[in-house]
Length: 308
Ligand code: C5P
Image (cartoon, rainbow, N blue to C red; front, side, top):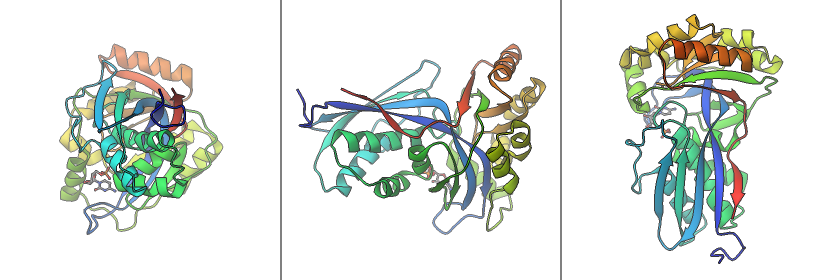
């Protein structure tokens, strides 16, 4: 039986992890956020969010076996429930849904897994309830949920300004291969920004470097490797000195470049192509790293994969 009146009982939306090819962080703003000049890329590692009409809000979170769910809140503070309430308030509705989240993106890994869930929940509920929310409104609601959530809707490769929520697609001719080394323990984003404030001297107006955009436009991995930068690397390494060894092992394994993903602790290694990525992946495994995978980018933003 259809609860939505449209023949659709539930909708599943898939949303991708993001990496920051450049993460320039400015001095702390009065609102507690930092101005960013970043380049996001969506990579092929996904969470799926399924929404079903229900009389009350409900949440069930499942995950691939390698993922630790102990830090995921299951109460009203979870980003998918915040997304649901925000969307229904925006349309002045009094509706609820049962939401299932199936995670393939590590929690607190610097890959914006929570943001992917928030974006997916917004889109899934919009489709389930046939609200036809405009793209601009969806992006504004996404920005209320978190700085990285608008990018999770947009996907591909894009610059991010403001606190990261002002997103603009950029030309990207490449198909980029990343070896992804996850950590056993997450690293909360606010702690890494606090460490930066304590120890760093961020500029007032961070910028996206032109050579990085040029490398993307021509699709040259050797050039891109020279332009990868992350201002959160130093504070993340101070909080997690063990990551220095992961980065060094990636270089030893022949990757073109290594970097901390966002606020960490996931580390990323750029490779020339799929074959090179599988060679680096094997080397990293031989060096004793257990949570090693590879993913290509750019991939699409949040999108419906199933109506039932
Ligand atoms: O926007 P989001 O909820 O993802 O941010 C989580 C935390 O990360 C913020 O509370 C803040 O401590 C930090 N942050 C920041 N500057 C940004 C984005 C996030 O300081 N541009």
